[in-house]
Amino acid sequence: MGFNVSILFLFVSAAAATILPIGAAIYLGRRYNTSWKAVAIGALIFILFQPILRLPLLKLLQGTNWFTYNSVVNPWLIAIVLGFSAAIFENIGRFIAFKFLLKHRLQWKNGIAYGLGHGGIEAILFAGVPLIYAIIAGINNPSLVNQAPALYLVGGLERIFAMTFHIAASLIVLYGVRNKNPDIFSMQY
Image 1 (spheres, rainbow, N blue to C red):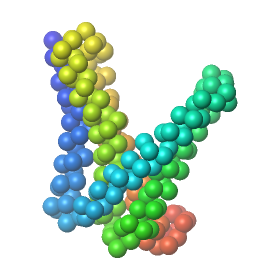
Image 2 (image 1 turned 45 degrees about the vertical axis):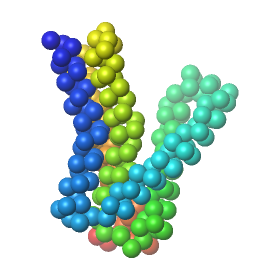
Image 3 (image 1 turned 180 degrees about the vertical axis):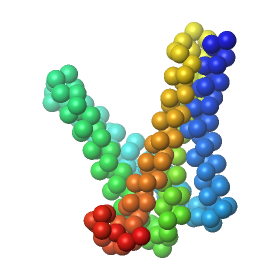
């Protein structure tokens, strides 16, 4: 019984990480006539600024004595460095996308489409694909699916929150570019 529920919850999380962003982008495109270019650029900017640029730099940082020492002594500092580096890389990518690649598509609906592309590809690559592999591995070897079933829902839930955040962050950068104002707190909506 527990195994079947675990596999079901893995499927639910995998669907949240793969089908949800794709379905939301399709719905948005049909309902609001959003730009598919915005979705594609969101995905490409994420791939360029995270796996291609940021992650190799973090790998270099992880090889330093500073990182090793602080991982043990000051793990909160490492968490801050990792969080800020993600924010810096992703928001520079968003800025470049809206300033140069989507400069004629600065409507709210395309900001949401960009955020779905950005957060959606992250969900697919870092949660959806691994969850699909976990399902396959678990079916082939049930002993690999040995956590409390509810824990398998956490990945999907986290991806929903992360995609929502990516949409919000994308809208903030879009409005900053559109209003030519770096001070997000004084923007006119």
